[in-house]
Amino acid sequence: MKMNKYTGILFGAAFAVSQLFSAPVDVKSPDEQISASFDVKNGVLHYKVAKNGDPVVGESKLEIIAGAKMALVNQSVRANDTSWEPTWGQFSTVRDHHNELTLELTANGMPVKLLCRVFDRGVGLRFVLSEASKGQKLTFYNAYRLIEEEGFYCPKGEQGVAGPLSLKQLSSVKVPTVVERADGSALALHESDIYSAVGFGAMKLSYNSEIQSFISSSSATSSGAGQITPWRVILLDNSIGELTVNMVTMNLAAPLALEDDSWIVPGKGLWDWRVHGYNNGDFVYGIDTRSYFRYIDFCSDQGIEYFTVDDHWFKSAKDGKMVVAPEVDIEKVMAYAKEKGVKIKLYYDRKKGDFGDETLFSYYAGLGASGMKYGFMGSKVDFTRAAMEAAAEHEMVINFHDGPVPMTGVERTLPNLISREYCHAQQDSRRAFTPETFLKMVMVNGLVGPLDMANGNFGLNSINAGERQKGPRKKNSYVSTVVSEVARTLVVYSGLITLPDAPEEYLKKADLFEFLKRMPATWDDSRVLDANIDSYISIARRTGDTWFVGSVNNSHERTLDVSLDFLDANKTYKATFYQDAPDTHGGTNAESYEIKTASVKRGDVIKAKMAVGGGHAMILEPIN
Image (cartoon, rainbow, N blue to C red; front, side, top):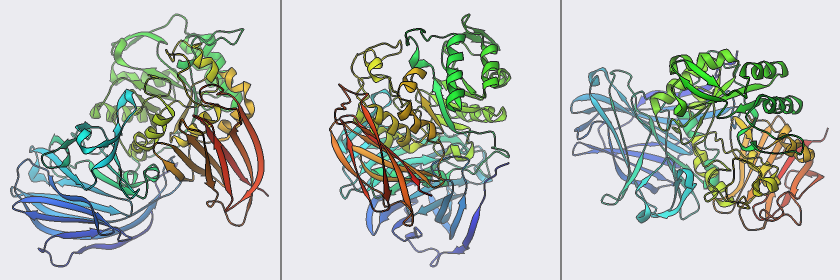
């Protein structure tokens, strides 16, 4: 049984800050580069954030009860340096190194605490309520008066990502809101651990031009002692690309809530939805038992852990009864998958009727499902929390579809949340999906955690020719290359790597598919090597002593220098390069590629030549 493991030493056990009633009260990050400062003026609590002495967030208001008069009673600081092991993720071990300031306050005489944790790469703010607050209406108000005036990005649902925007172009925006600052560094307004903050809704942001500040505000009724708010988070990094491996939100999330997480298996999964109508010359894929058998056979033969059965396998669901499509013998399908050692993830949403939440998960588990893809329930925090808990109770992973609650950091707490479609899925709404949109979603939407973007199509010519029932509706609108598709599956962090194409298309390019077969879905280390939000990204991920590297390009041909400075200095590596060929073009010759090998070492620079909409991938293995 795998449990969270904590190591390290707790420093400075709750020592008092000097000059107790002086103002402002400051707390700094362990490396002393980031500081947060607090002050109570005329009964109003304010804070500021600076980096290297330069203001990042100007004086801004914090509030837990609307209009309440605040007073400072006491203050203390403790230092923390521990580590923990995720069930799965971008790192096998995560260091939690921060200094925490506790402000003991009163709000209209009612005791309340504010916690501020300052990391080397961000700041978290949370209120903790007292028993005296029970029944009180809480309004967690947080203003952010940012110093920067342009370079803002935020998710935009089916339209991809909005940005870069100036403050004048902002109104209501989604989480996270990312800022590329004038010096090239990056900031993100975010949240964490809404899972533990029962009663609060998901964070929403708006820009108030009168006070020149972003505003987040959410309400709940206090349950008394122990009631907490979500963490309001300000991420600070050297570049937008590095935000994708920033672990502050994960460190602020609640620890593992499961006694046994051994049943949670990250991996790759075939998906049927985009294959419907595909004709291999002898067989046409549809929503039927024989098609599902073919997918299962492929997964079993190729070592693919999951197969996702999407919508229309059932016709209706109501009051604990499900009418399965006559073409699907679901019991036979599930038995066959079990025999072949393939895990099945079944789709469900309420547009065909409400089966009933109390019995839904036991029904799916009774069928033998290892997971559920839950669709179209939107930003309902209580529902999302309950669904994750019910899935965990029945040892099922879950993937939320179509604009779900971000629930940032929750894969630490309930790691059966294996992915989410908090993004614009790759073959949906072609008007919005471009190589540039992909890059922006990785560096903006990806900050919420694992994403289900459904990368990894190999039959790009067939897709662009309109030979699939599920799009794209506009022919020749999918700009990508097969090498870029491989690299995208590595670049996008997810506990379930969804492979959306027909088995035959992967088998046609078996040598290229080898990269996907070998690539795991959980890592020991992850590093952003280079990134530009409009142009490219290059990420290296390590499993054991083998590195996988993926680089993805925008719509302009380029050669990217990829430095191998992350390799062990004492080893020589066999490098296998998966790259666009000289004649590859994401719009006109998408399936051309080449594979080469070479010996490389630390300090070498690889010239990654990428086509329009192209990419580059590498496997680097030590030579014995």
